Image (tube, rainbow, N blue to C red; front, side, top):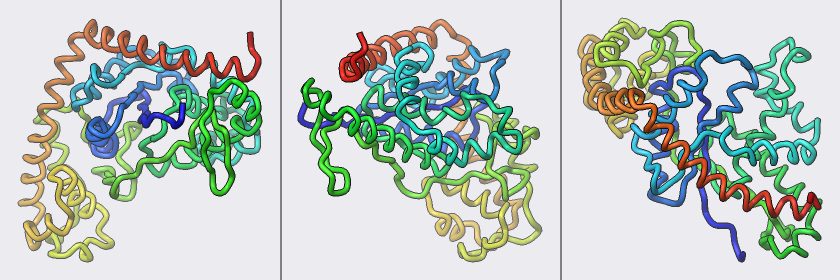
Length: 353
């Protein structure tokens, strides 16, 4: 092998309803990436138990995420869609990476600090080792590119650190086995078994905020359902939530600068821009000077136009769990074949019989 084959990997946790922010920030981009290179899209069900071990509906949530993938336009025939736990090589490589990674690396992860909070001694070991499993998810396919948001960039940097340490620690064995690729990291030549994964951050990702508080991200964990537009919401629910969305009494400005200090207005204009593939400036050219009593119905109509077909297809797929399970089974078999090839090399390099 003279170079690593370009390959995209990404995953979504099956925890709660996917919402508009997930669609605009992730799913829509996943669909667009299909035309650029081969893609592997995973429902990362093992990650969902790191902070919450007991789930009463994990299977149904896994199927729901899969339905969202398919309804958004991901092609499970040309590409691979599967659930993480169905490919045990993820866990096998994660254990090896637990032995490669250093405790100090894990302790520096800001997301662990945020999720563990003040009671970090009572957090699960899985939550601490979460980035190691994430690295295994990516590198068990020797993926070269990963679409990431700001909250995952540090984890991707750790993935690169783990890959680099493995490549350096086992450089002689990799070379003897003839399974590596000559790459340069900075100015350092490395005979690598694992690639240095590149983040894919294409254009400014729409930062979709809560409909009830423009200072907070739209979240599936928010106790108020009115704070978000779920992909499973019907037309009536979408219209109602946008109508009730928090705003201020002033008219929309004619220029983007006029949105400064107006978090809720900025959020709604940003949502309209993302759904219509326009800039905020173009939206304000159309609606500047208008009251929210005019803008909100237009936003609701646009949201329904974009989301209604996805919602309808999601509902159809969720009502056919056998089809979803068949897609996941086919995907896990194809993913497993790639993962096992990688792990055969890892076992040989390390010296595992």
